[in-house]
Length: 311
Ligand code: RIB
Ligand code: CA
Image (cartoon, rainbow, N blue to C red; front, side, top):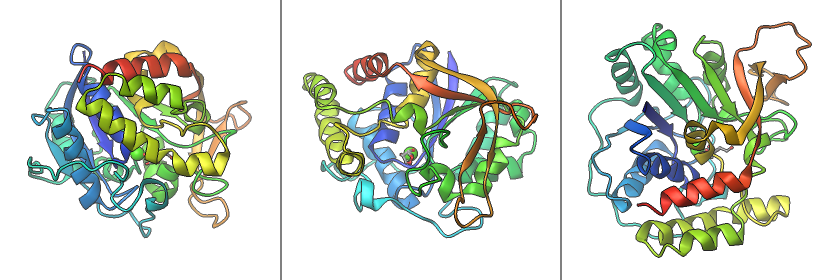
């Protein structure tokens, strides 16, 4: 049983990660969902998280709102991918559940530090602002965590928001650098993995076949969400990025990678937010990340779709 906190900026791939985790109570205990500004402003990410929980009738999980902006930079959002709401493509009712009281970074610190060392895993699906703030508030957090599993960065896949940078890292590179050097065990799931995991027509139809409200909603949300990437890359389907973090916790065997040193570019205007992955160990710097470069996409979607079908 893993106790997890999911820090996210829901667009549909974040929401799928949350629901897959909640559909796996025998393996994962979701202590809280914390939200941050990223794909859309935090007022919307906090709303979208609650919409997903209510759709799945899982309102017992507290949702906290976090940072409205990166540590030092101006917020860059991704409405061009996810629509103005971050949840375009399917109308979900306004949430009736309220936000949990408190600031997300404070909740992260409290939930981790009130438990024994090594009991809580942070699942990071968004810009890492909340995590960096939590580390600034409680320096012992890093050594108290079991693991940080994050979706972000890239090695040979380059970038998706700029030619050099992946969105979650690009939005708050200083926060990402802070997290990567914090000393906690870190597993990184980059674009190299998620660009192999596409929401093809067949996979979306397999989801829809459950005929449940969750399946119908996420069929349409993911169908909208893949338009941008299909037009950009010419693929059939879009990458289901964030659910890979939860899939790693449930089935690590469908991934492969190695421990390497990863650093973040925080200065160059040309390559800001680039993750510099020392895959061949040429720097001699000690590994700070388990970097997962490959995924078995069929087994990934079998897992994700089966779990969503339980809700
Ligand atoms: O680059 C992909 C990441 O950016 C995912 O977390 C997606 O939800 C967006 O936040
Ligand atoms: Ca995300």
